[in-house]
Length: 552
Image (cartoon, rainbow, N blue to C red; front, side, top):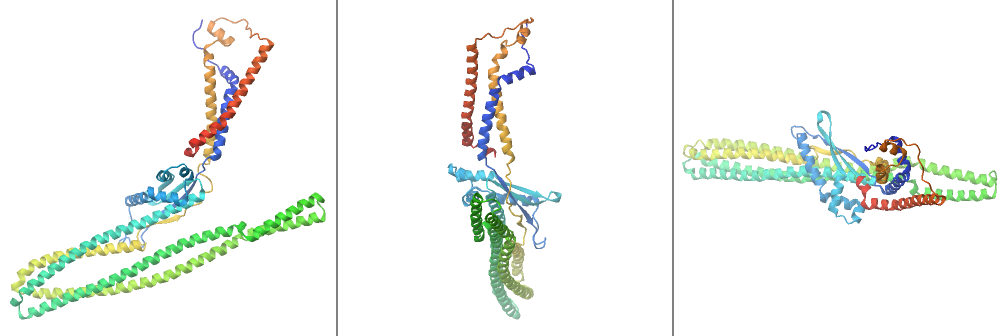
């Protein structure tokens, strides 16, 4: 007697599958149908992408050095933190009405913003030598037009945030240096006042010409203050004109952006011939002629003159509709040209005003250079007088200490003044977009096909596989106990080790045979009913859990 387990042959396995075919087919079909029904609500996601590049400075590299890869990465990370923050994304969710199902389900706007952040991808773009030349912004959403609009808005927010951060940094630096410059100027003036007091207190010990020299020195100091005040007035006027230039630049950018949007809207309107009165009139006419032709065909033959005349009239109406459609390109061109001309006229007017303002700035710069020349000449005269006064022995020692402090304070003041001018230039570069900026190279595209279209087929086959797996599990559940019983002649010969000479089939009466057939039919009908009832249940379960939305 053999107690070892008999291995099943492929023929045995095939027999099991034939015997349990309904256990395999019904779960597979039920799960596949449930998945197919649920796939009707499968969220198709469209991906819109915009490419932004780092524009080099429009002025000398010595004046505005380019950013390194590390600085650019840090700046992009800082800007991205602001653009992709919860508050910023929450505004976009409310502005464009994003994720309506989540809002209807009562999900907080902050959580929806975090979900939206997962649909946004920012990737740096590297050129030759692995140098960062720009970055791509992508956004996935169920509506292609909304995906395009949101991507364009994100790109614009990156640009606005970069400009704001650059201007804020430059202005903060300028204000800090300006404060230090005022303190240094106050210290310098105090030392100068101290020096004048020493000279005034020793006026009797000076030579007879000393009084005239001191008077000349005071006059030069007053003249120096007057020149500084005049220069300050020029700087304030220059700042006012410069603010006007900034405002004009902003207006020019607004005109360009509005012109592009107006052109796009006009082109879209021009391409929709369905909204024109002529198209509506032709459609109405074609409907009437078609109805007339159908009535004539019911009354007369195909060659009847009235039928032929109605067919000719219907063909003419169709030709007029096609002719109206062919004129779309000319209407689009006319609308596009008109919108561009309006934008160019507005832009040209603003540019003329900006050129006038820039001319005023150049004139003010010339005047300021003249004032600087006067300051240098006045300073040279002051130095000459001071050198003559310092030759007086009685006050020379007292003045030397003050002069050393004054020289040190003057050097510090000159260094701060140089830094102040550098910071002022940086503010002007950022305001006039002359420094390194971020610009849109490829605007947000309108996606035509969903990104996750291939997942439908995958999920459908996955559903078939899951149903088949469940059917195999049921088959194993019913067939596993049979493996430990003798079910055939082969099992009897294997486990007993004896040859089987004959096998007697079950002896059933005709009534028992009919009862067995009925039982089989009843089980199959019950299985089909259960499978049919399971299809909507599974479909509802998949929809309730939003499984495909998470996968998609």
